[in-house]
Length: 253
Image (cartoon, rainbow, N blue to C red; front, side, top):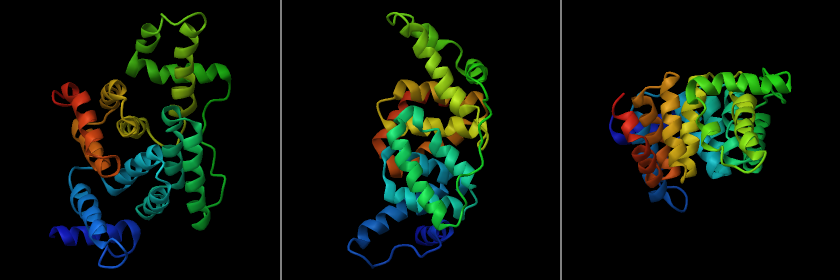
């Protein structure tokens, strides 16, 4: 297939509609957009449609581009993502972008689910039953991948914060989200890399989580593929920032 044929095929696959033609106020821009994202990026690398769409809704959640999130939640469903997978992808953005933005994305997602006849609320996926488990289960996931890096780094914090901040990370970042069913650990870690890359300014964390993503089974090619796929939504500078931050990890594995 040539580029135009690839674009048409992918748009049909994802959105069940034709690729952009001469309609609308800005047909040239839409053709450039679709040609790059759906004719080029979607055909480069190993990730399948399902994983690419989870990457896409992650970036759109971070960027709060909610009209586009609506379209891509629909695309996720069209390519076989389950409602639970979509929800878990958006839920786990909260530790990185905050609750208000995550709530905006959840509201957008739920509107699509309602329109699609999906019954809400979706089945619960939590596995933590007590506050003690929240810490212990979170630490059981965190420690083998990231060790005690955060606890060791922030011993200088005043008073109770030296203990509270690392504990909050373990309980909130890992206990509340990484312990949940609905997405496997490999997928969760890959999508966290995308969250951090899309945020911008989090290159230290990008590097750490690229290493973590590889420890749980992601290949360098899969990580680069996800980042390159995301660049049409987050911009090329953030792609290069993420690649540069993780270069020494990605190029030797």
